[in-house]
Image (cartoon, rainbow, N blue to C red; front, top):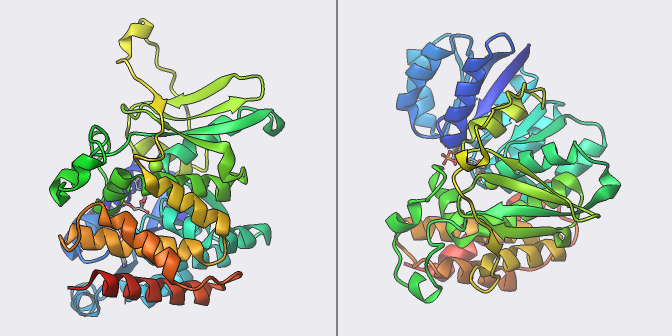
Amino acid sequence: MRNVLLLGASGSIGTQSLDILEKHPERFTLRGFSLGKRVHMIPDFLKRFPSVEYLCVSQAEDAENLRKKYPNLKIYHGDEGLVSIIEECPCDMVVNALVGFAGMVPSVTALRHDRILCLANKESLVVGGSIINGLLREGKGRLLPIDSEHVAIAKLLSCIKREDLSRILITASGGSFRNKSRAELTHVTRDDALAHPTWSMGAKITIDSATMMNKGFEIIEADVLFGIGVDRVTPLMHAESYVHSLIELRDGTLLADISKPDMHGPIEYALMETEVDFTPVKAKSLSDYAPYHFHAFDPERYPAVGIALDSHRRGGNSNAILNAANEAAVYAFLENRIPFLQIEEEVRYALDTLPFMAEPSLEDLIAVDKKTRRVVNEHIGG
Ligand code: NAD
Ligand code: MG
C-alpha cells in the first residue's frame, strides 16, 4: 500500500492520476493533494477520496476560506505551502503534476525526504537535472518518469542489454502547426495553437508542442534520466502519436512501444512502479491498425529544439534561463502580448543576455528563474 500526495490535481495529468489512484484502491491511499486556483474542484475530489487530510492551494485567501469550510483538514498555500505539505503529509509517494518551474523545488523536496517521485513536471529535470541526479546518487528517494516518451524508452531499455543500445528515436507529433510552413506561422493565434491534433493537455505544454520546445525539453529529460547524451537521441516526426518512442540497437534492430495516445497508460506505469499487468490484445490482422507514418525532423522548421540542446550542452545555469524565458514568453503569447514566432526570439534573447554561472545551487536557480522572467517581460514591454 502506498500513501500518496498528488501535486497539481486539477490539471490534465493530475485528473488522470486521480483516475489511476481510484482504479487501484488496494494499492493507493490518497493522503493529500494540491491545486492552483480551481478550488471549485475540491468538493468532488474530497468526495471521491475521503482519505485526504492535507490540502494545498495557490492563494492565501482561498486557504483561509477552506480552513473554515474544512476544519478537519490541514490546509497550506503558495510555494512555501507546497514544500510544507511534502514535508508534513505522511506519504511515501509524491506525484508531481505541476506545470513549469513551480514544480522544481517540490521535486527536490520530495527526493530530499526520500519519497518515491512520480514526475510529470519535466521542467524540474530540464532546470535541476544535476541536483536531482545528485540526490538520487546519494540514495535519496526514487524517480519514475510519467512523460509518455520516457515511459516508452524505460520499458524498451528494460528489454535489452545496455551495451546493445545505439540510439533513442524520440517521436514528435509536430503539434498544432505541423502542416504549416514557418512563413505561415506569422499570424497564428492562441486558439489555433491550443488545438493540438492528437493530445489533450494543459495550455503551456500545448504551446511547447507547437514550437517543439517540448521535444527539446524531452531530449534533455532523456539525457538526465537515462544518461545517454543528447547527441544519441534523435527526434522523429510521427503525426499519429501511436509510437511513443523507439530504440535502435547496434545491429540496426528497432524496438517500439505502440499504443493509442492516452496518458493513463504512462501514468499507471509510473504509479505502479513499473509493475503493471500487460493485457495482450489480439489483433485479427495487422490491417486492424490505422496506418501511421514517420518522417525526418527539420531543425530549421523547429529551431526551438536546437536552442534547447545548445543550452543543455553549455550547462551551468543555461537551462534555468532557457526554461524561465520560455515560460515567460509562452504566457505572454497566451495573453496575446506577443506573436507566436516571438517566443523563440525571447528565449534566444535571454540566453544571450543573462550571465553564465557554472555550478548553480538550488537557490541560484531560483534567483536566475526570477531574474530571467523579469528581463524577458521588460524586453516584451507593454
Ligand atoms: P495543467 O496546466 O493541466 O495542470 C497544472 C497543474 O499545476 C494544475 O493543477 C495547476 O493548478 C497547478 N499549478 C500551476 N501553476 C502552479 C503554481 N504556480 N503553484 C501551484 N500549482 C500550480 O498541466 P498538465 O498538462 O497537466 O502538465 C503538467 C506537467 O506534466 C507539465 O510539466 C507537462 O509538461 C507535463 N506533461 C503533461 C502531459 C499531458 O498530457 N498533459 C504529458 C506529458 C508531460
Ligand atoms: Mg511527452
